[in-house]
Length: 87
Length: 290
Image 1: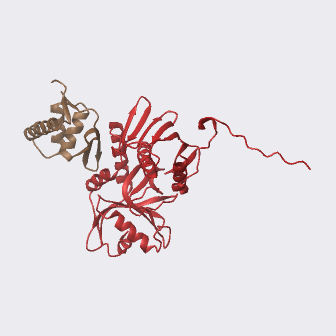
Image 2 (image 1 turned 120 degrees about the horizontal axis):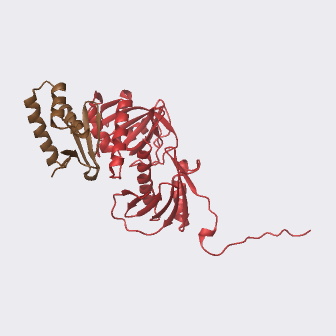
Image 3 (image 1 turned 90 degrees about the vertical axis):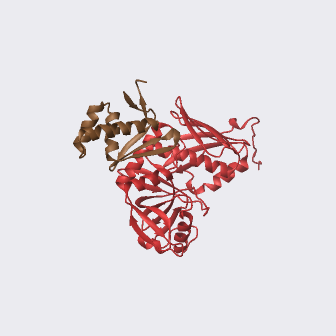
């Protein structure tokens, strides 16, 4: 189960979502699809729930949405913005 | 005729026995009191330096100030909250405040520069807590509204401020022709009754003015850049936010404060107009575009 790392502040401003990692003095900026994924994870949705959100908001098929979700969550894990509760 | 009995009674012992009224400072509508111990010269200098911001209502914070020679490093302050108290620390000062009672103890180098740095640290924290912020920026009042010019180091904040002050015919930046420089380095904002106001700032850079008390509604924000000609342009909200966060003074690394900072920045973007201003240092012609 993926979780957002504790101690991050984030907020949607205009069409984008901004994440502040105060401890590292870093600012991350997510575009529309990335923001949908982030907000899905933040609200505790599972993979199929987030894929459904992406498909309904953007003009992509389910296969593309699943691949994008996998790629993006890997990137978030690599950057230390997500933690894997199972590991 | 009997001579009057004129006398003076002096108490021996520590200064704590002598009643002393605190030096009150009212900056950006937040009041803090300071009880100075020892080094009367340093205390006198501080009282004089912040003269225009002295006085005011009952202080929210009351500090007992002990002057002591401290090492200068590190220069960058740190703010830590723990168990109902906040610690503001830099090489030349160390302060612990009870956030419940507002009572604090400050140990600081007996210098105006150290005290100024302490005040900047303290008020950056106070303003973020109450929905405002301290911005590394130039601030100018034109026709009763405050305009904030954001820029990284070298973007031209001091140059622009000096040009504006010169155009007002008064180098100190006092009102003339509807133009007044609020600060060439640090400006103070609060969110009040649904909109932001900019408060007079005692914190200055190269211009070394003392500032004055007062507050003005926000007229707009400009992302500043030196250029060969004056030009006004649009900017995206994310561009504005990035620079806003970079210019927002915050030494507290806690996630709560980061959340408050983001909320304030989002409010600023929603409530005020942000534009890009390219300006030439030849003259104050940019004021026509503001």
